[in-house]
Length: 406
Image (cartoon, rainbow, N blue to C red):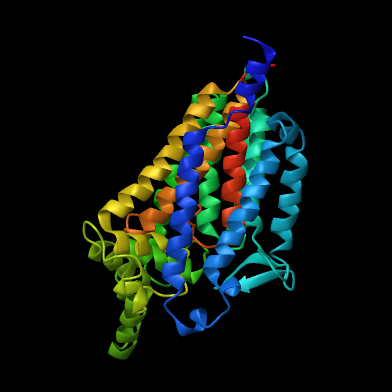
């Protein structure tokens, strides 16, 4: 085999993954259009100001960024990974500062750049994957040292705690499986990981017992009231269980009405998914979305899967899940073909991150996960989410392009 043939193999992209990516972007454009073009406020805008077109612009910018990522060998990117990581940590701190971070929906997660609402938590996930892969690609003997293990945990926990502070529980939680899977694949001793997971599992059980069963007035874990309410809704707990002992009938009724209001989004999303049937009602024919039962503020982002399921039914839902499956399985194949541990860890980190987003978002649409605000990659509307999803896939293609030694 001559050098020209080798160079050709180096430059070849994973075409199957790219095909799935293109179809997801086409579906995303179509159903963001369907979810948003149901109100006079949106239809009266010029076409270039409508949400679906802005989504197309983010796709174009994200593809450009992914191409830029592919232009550099991932080893070069890894050398700058800690610079990017600490830059994102600074941004995560800055977003918590009043007058720098923008407050929306009770959370301070964005920095208003005028034409763009920059969400540092999305970019911090990518920075963590690169920095974590760089850190964990050290010699296996070093990974067996307890201090190296705790340094790796610290690398994960710093952005986790800052994102949790915003608060953005969903994005923070996605970091945990991503980091732990990367550590497992890198060769971190399993006894370290099992002890850590066991301790976290025990704390999680105690946390849920505290949230779900302790009556009002007792010590409770500090968290935002809407986060507590989402957990109560997910586990089907009656709000009146937490009412003061001397609550009047009027107060109990008010608490019950609050519970009905809090579970409204989840209930309507589940109705949307179920009402689609096998083949759906047809594109732009979904009554849950068109009549506003599925809240219009979240239909095109958090609950885009419900819109797809109502309009295209079970078949459309399976197609979407299959496309994600193609991306995930080709990502695992890329990890298996990587020429070194650094490339393998980058690919594994991206696959785990995407899987976490898909599982949590679709799970909250069908009520097997609590509502957390985690976007569905490439389908949910959002500039930061789209950019980071495409950059992440660009990183996987980068590993694939450089899968063989020089």
